[in-house]
Amino acid sequence: MRATSASIAELDAGLDGRIIVPDDTGYDEARAMFYGGHDLRPAVIVRAGSVNDVVRTIAYAQDAGRELAVRSGGHSGAGHSSTDGGIQLDLSDLRALDIDAEGRTAWVGSGLTAREYTVATGEHGLATGFGDAGTVGIGGITLGGGVGFLVRKYGLTIDDLLAADIVTADGRVRRVDAETEPDLFWAIRGGGGNFGVATRFRFRLHPVDTVMGGMLFLPATPDVISAFIAEAEAAPDALSSIATVMVAPPMPFLPPELVGEPILLAMMVHADGGEAGERAIEPFRVLAAPIADFLRPMPYPEMYMADEGEHPPRFASRTMFVDGIDAPLAGTIVERLAASTAIMSAVQLRVLGGAMARVPADATAFAHRDRRIMANVATLFEDPDEEATHQAWVTGLHDALRSDTPGAYVNFLGDEGEERVHEAYPGQTWDRLARIKAEVDPANVFHRNQNIPPADR
Image (cartoon, rainbow, N blue to C red; front, side):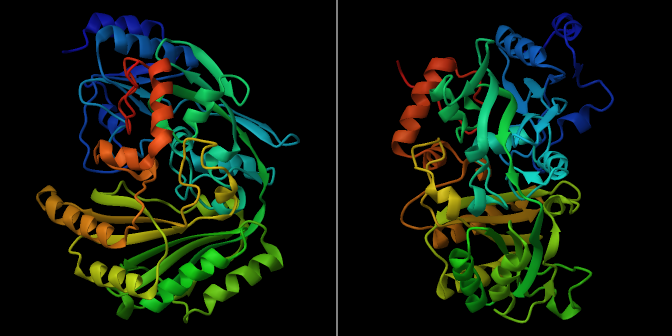
C-alpha cells in the first residue's frame, strides 16, 4: 500500500512542520537511526512543528491504515524509531524549553536531546538526571525510565517527572500528572511509548553544579573488576558509576602495549563534588595503578561533551540485572571478551541502589527498584553474515552472567520477542499496563515499540 500524492499533499497543507518523502533531498539522512543495521524506508516522514501536527499525523496514519513509528532521538536499538512503508513521526523539532530556576522545574519539548537540556539547565546550576549519552532524545529515555549519572543521588529520570502532555490514539491532548489521570501518569513512567505520543515533559530540577566526574581507566583483572563493583555499591549515594570492561582499542593516551588487553573504563559522577567527591573517588584510584585518570572537578554538563562520533555499525546486545560481580564471574567476563571476534565487544556494569531503590517498586511502571547491578553485553560488527556468530557470543555471556531472577531494562532491549518484554514488566506491572493500554489504545496504534498489547476486555 502506498500513500497517494493527494493524501500526502492534504496532510502537508495543514502542517506547521514539514513532510519528507523518498524522492526528497535529505530523505536518507532523515530516516537514518543512531545504530546501524536498520535500513527502514518510511513512506512519509512527518517532522512535527507543533502538537497539532502530532494530532493530525496520528489521525492520518489510522485513516490510511499505515504503521506509525515515533522518533525522538533515533536511538532505538530495536529499530522502533522508524518503519518500512509506514509513517515516521519525528519529534526532533519540538524543542521548546521553559526553565523555572527559582521553582526548580522545567517544561521541555520531547525532541530536545539530553545534552541540550543539560547544558541549558546547567547555566542555572541545575540538572535532571538522564542517561550517559548526550544525543538521546528526551522523549525515549524518559518514557523508558532513564538510568544515568545521577541515578544513585536522585533516582531515575521518571522519578523527576512531574507531568507530561500526551496525545493519545483518539487525538486527545492530555495533561497527565499525579492528580490528573494518575493511571496514565503511572504507565508512562517506564512503560515506553505504548500509550501515546509525549510532546513535552515537566521535570524537577536539582542543584547540580560542579561535580567530581570524568573517566578512570584501570587494568581489567578479575580482582580489580570485582573490587570496583564492591566499592561502587558501598560508595555514598552521591556517587554513580558506569564501568565498561572491554578489550582496549587504540587510544591516544594508551601505551601501545596495552592495545588488545582488557581494560576497565569507568564513567563516574559525584554529584556533590568538593572534598566529599575527592574522598569518594580515592578508593577507586588505589585499586590498581590507573592507566589514565581524567577524574576532576567539572561543570556537570561536561559529562555529555564527548563527541559520540559516527553512527555505530551493526551490533548485538543483551541487557539484564545481576546480583553481584565476584572475582570468578569477572574472570568469565575477561575470558569471554578475549574470545570475541567482533570489532569491539564490551560488558557494561551500572551499579544501582541509592535514591532509585528507595522508590516503591509499584510506584511507577519501572519495576526493578531492588536490583543491584544492570549489565549490558554488546558487540559491534560490520559484516551482516557474521550476525549469528556475534549474537551467539552475546547470548552465551548473558546466560553466564544472569541471576536466577530474570529482568530487563526496556530502553536497552533489542528486537527480542514478547518474553523479554515481559521481563521488563514482570507480573502485576504487565497486567496493569495492559489494562491501561486497553483504555487509551485499544487498537494498538502505538505498537512500534517494546509492545504491551491491550488486555482483553
